[in-house]
Image 1 (tube, helix red, strand yellow):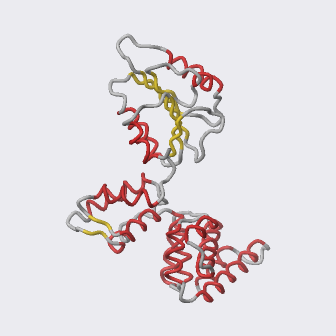
Image 2 (cartoon, rainbow, N blue to C red):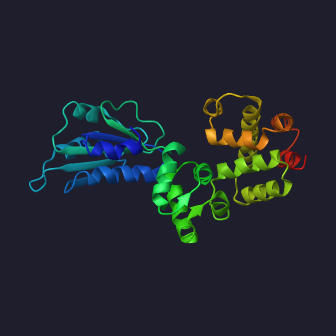
Image 3 (tube, one colour):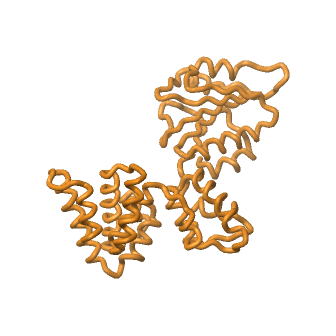
Length: 305
């Protein structure tokens, strides 16, 4: 199940073992909190990455004279052993609940029988309603909410921080638009690189130079910058050269449908210019790899072409 489904499931029953995994720390902590809240009065035991499976199972099997419910929370290390926990899963102790935390994108393959809770960044279809609910009675336009999700990489930790900031800035503003968010939004490095590519494609030299200067001043690797720009141009090229569904193209290119939608909006009227710019970027990429040009010079060549 994903994080959004967890809360509803806890109203029905609490499972004996949960594997909470993902890269959004806020969602992981929130998931643990939700499970904890579903067990009022439970005795809680926490283990770090150094704990063994046998230690965890022993804690689960240890009953308390005063408590009827025991909650054990354990963080998994790099190479966890699940032999003892898999054995425990065959006959879990009634009244005991185990939460295993894994800060990995994919769940542990060797753990059999646990209820898996996906705490990776959620898609915009789930995040946008959550954003709207969090800022009520204020309202946010769909484009602004999508922009916020894209600029934060979909990490609810960052979204929550940004919304808290915006609530202070715009306490008297009933409806938030992109133009309100942009001046105060703290964007991820990936999104800054995305905007750099967009500025280059749109021939916005001043904007491109400002974004590049900011990225360099923040010690962002120049190869990462150039690679990100090439990826942005690739998605713009495929978005304007194909009429396929935005979800299909997004899946092929590994980006959000939102990015394809706006690439078509911004560059759909001039696909030939996108094609030529993408071809130029590929040419410069080859020159970098063959040692004919530096990355800095290649970026300048794209911006000032």
